[in-house]
Length: 322
Image (cartoon, rainbow, N blue to C red; front, side, top):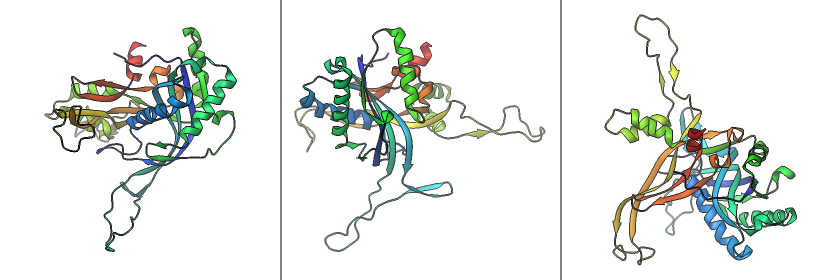
């Protein structure tokens, strides 16, 4: 069931250049910041906008289109290693320990689902609000990276605050015009369904983790009908669903403790929970393949009873209904 908040408008911040963003998205994955980093950015930006616009604009969901990326790694065949910085020496002159930090340079477009009275303002007022928000964001960190000045000027690089058409029949043409502006690039969407299918087909004891690892790699195998006497045959890979990647999607609870029972907790008045990362499968697709905003936007979801705190995207749900 979808819990995507209803949005009356879109805030589009195109072609943001991010330097040295965090490329290590979880203990097991790297290559692009986690979507939880962008949801966290949305919340941090909301806190800065509240006093400026007197709560006239509320951010509720976010989508990411990546136009270019440059992960800071050294390659030696199939082996890659992060380019690490040398830290200053300690006070006694000894060499400081090296803490592995993965960095990546990005060119991305952020699309926020928004609502509030500012969405209903005129074109000039909305353009001024979008530019002001872009200025505020330029002073923030995006997934740990620094926002650089824009490298291009023109209509396609200007931030926009747009109302979503009220008539459902007008939303299709309106969205198709928008998605063309996001090319070339790739949007990250959730494919929880692929992981669920892989788990259902798994016969190993560690079904969930084995299914996730299987979907995370490129697997080559001979045809099922190939035998020792069939001669030459073409090996086949299992990447028929597109550009599939492993992604972290939030946190799951390991143990819970009563308020004040854990030393040095940030807030001793609330229960304390130890958590571990949750993993799923994502897919990079061209924006021109998106059929609606629901397929692009990510939003926060939580189930305290089950101990799940994660981000969700409705791409698979919408696809199953079409």
